[in-house]
Each structure stands twice: as C-alpha cells, then as structure tokens.
Image 1 (tube, rainbow, N blue to C red):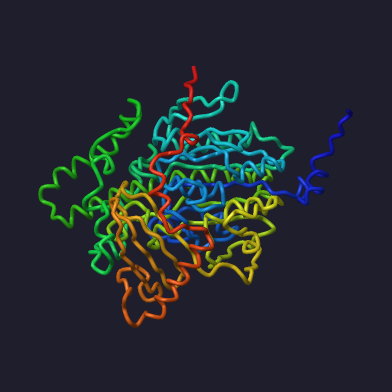
Image 2: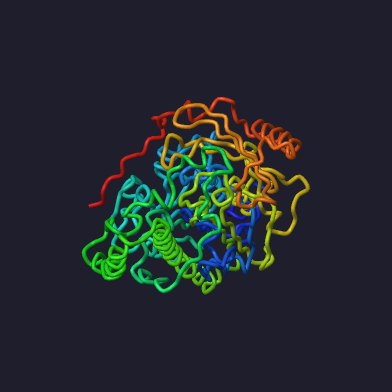
Length: 524
C-alpha cells in the first residue's frame, strides 16, 4: 500500500491545532526553593534580580500563585501531570514518579513539538516524553555535578562535569538551543536549576558579594508560635537551632576539587576566623542574627547566579529573534522562608511557602508590565502549556489553562478558593501532615497526623487583619460564620478533587515497584 504523508501544518489544522508557524515555543524556567522575597519584581528589599524582572516588566506577574503541596518532588509531579499528588501518586520526596502516566511533554511531543529538559529533575525516574534530557542525579551538588542523559541505545548514562552547577545548566541550555534544536519545529524546553536549594553554595565570583551589606530581618523572625497550634512549635527548621555547620559554611566542601577549595577558603576562611573569635562573647540573640546573615546572604548569592543565567538565555532569544514567538514562564517549586517565623525551608500552608513566583512573557499576547491577582497554581501549568500550543487539554487534568488570564480576561467561573495538602511526616523538619483551604482572605488549616499518630488541630487565619498568620482565630465566636463557611468550602474542594477520607500517604509506605529508579550506567 502506498502511503501519503501530509505536511505537519496540514496535520495540525486537521487536528484542530494552530499551524506550526503560529504555535509558540515554550521556555519554562524553574528553580528550587526560590521565594518571592528574593525576587525584586516582588520584593526589592534584599536583592535586585534584573533579568528575572525583565520577564515581569515585559509580561505579567502573578501575585497569588499557590502550590498544591509545598515540597520539591511533588510540585514537579503536579506540573508534569496537571493533577494533585494523591492522583499522580507522587506524595512526598523519596517516591519515584510513574512516568508511564500521561504528561504534558508527551502530549506536546505527539503534537509536533521538540521537547527537552536540562537541569534538576528530582523525580527519581528516567524522564519520559523528551527528545533530549540532561538532568542532575538526585538533588545534585552545587559543584562538579554528575548528570544523567541518554546514551547508546537510549539507555541513561551518568557523565561528570567540572564547574559550578548553575552555570553548567545554563551552558547546556544554550547549547541545546544553538546546536540541537530543530528549527523546523516549535520547542518546549524546561530549563531547571538546583539553586537556591539548601545548602546554598555560591559561585566563586559571588563568594564575597554582600559582605559589606546587612540584610534586613523579617518582622516575624522572633516569632514564639504562641498564637497557633502545637504544630508550629514542633518543627525542626529554625535558624536558631537547626542550621548546621555545613549550612553555615563553617565546615565541608561538598564535591569541590582542590582548585575550587582554594578559592572557597580564601573567601570564607577570614570570615569564619573572625566569627570564631567573637563567638564566645556573643549573646544568644547575636548568634541568631549572625546565622541569619550568613544563611540569607549565601541564599541570595545563589539566586544571583540564577539571574545571570536567565539573562544569558533571554539575550539569546532576543538576539536570534526567537523571543518574538516564545512564551517564557518563570516559577519555582514552592516558596521558602528567609527567616520569617525564625525559619528556613518550606512545607507549610502558611503564605511564605504556599505562594511561589510566577512570571510570564509572551510578546504580542501579554501586555507588558501587568499584574494578576487571581488564584492560580502549579496545577495549571500543564494545561496552560497545552492550550497555548493548541493541544486539547485532557478532561481528567485538575487545573485550568492560564491563557485567558494572560490575555487580560478572567473567566466568570474562575476559582475563588484553593485546596492544599502536605503528606511528608514522619520526615525532614517534622512538619505535621495537614490540608486546608484558602480564599485569599481567610485560611483554614487542619493538622491531622504527627509522627504516625492522628491529631485533630485546626487553625483559622484572617489574612487581611493578620497577614503574617500569627494568631489563629479558630473557635473565636466572632468568626463562627466564617469558620463554618470555610469548613463547607474545604469539604467541597476535597470532593471536587477526589480526596478520600483515608490518607493516601498511610496506604503508600514504599515506592511502587514499577516506579523505582532505573540504574544509570556510567559513561566511559
């Protein structure tokens, strides 16, 4: 039988898609643990991020982007699938993502997009749906990272690299754009950094940046947790007690080589010696303040390198003309604590970790310098990518496309409330399992399990009167009507999103065998 091959543009039109020439390229820039407080498009008090700000200035800044589960791996699984953790199966770090399920990269690839991912994957399984992948092994170190890519017979192989990880990921991203990209196809490229994840090891050129600056302390840094349930005080993520010497750069080199250690010692050696001499005479409060400055400066130094890399990639798009037909999305897997409530890390449904940055530039479609205050989420990213590419959104995805919002139109039935659930306890930092609902004005949280035992602690916050969430009003007669309404809305959303009364984390103690991480071969 003789076969006839229709041009891709005709195939796209017959499938209900826009033509290949009209379909935008998609560049998704993603970081790990980058909070709004460290992005000057949101908050200029700690750092200036001119390149990330370019995306906001030339596009749209979203001010209420909430995550469904504030922790690294689960957030990434939600983005791949457009489904909550209890549906996609990736509830907490340590699981392995079942890549056999439908994901947006697979759908875009089937629709004619060239797909690639470079940088942090952190889903414990080999990426599927990508024409090209070159990803960090596990969390990945800040220096000299091993990275996994497809080798002979398309089997994953591990290759080692020398240099600073943020810069390596940027270089690989640019190399793919310049050398590997098929100019006859639209592309979807995920450019994903490890930074600024713990333990915040800066690039050599930024080791002394900010030495002569005092970073302002957040107003809640000395929070005593007296206005909430016991969960807030049982955590193990305080700057005062839980940052270790490795976090504070008082010991350890990670994966550095001898040359890198020499540069590191030249920067941190004198600073550490001065601290050790002063330590015995420091008060407890002075010691906390010193730890805060060391921690937050290293975090910001890592962000600085990310901003540099983003600038390089944006410059390349502009220089080549690709920017004209490329939608650029910037986000992070969740928010983060830069000393708020005395903390570092994430996990909570409290505002600093519930909210994540979201910036979108789409020339000709998004009005430059605009902001949006609708409730959006990482649950919506997959649907958005599919929609802008003209690909049908599967009915079982649980988010919604942001395309109308990007074009300045909020649908009448857009969500007015948001559901959240965190599962990882027992686990790092001792944050109780909890779920809740927020509408931006009020927030209801239920802490339901701690160290393997059921608990029944509730918190309710009036976010307009108490934006720092210092005093729960749960049980306060003045809020009885609000409390009842929030309980009803919580149950409505649990039903809508098919959340069962039994905790899925209690049913899934180990990774499903089908999801276990394949062993990557080492390249010769």
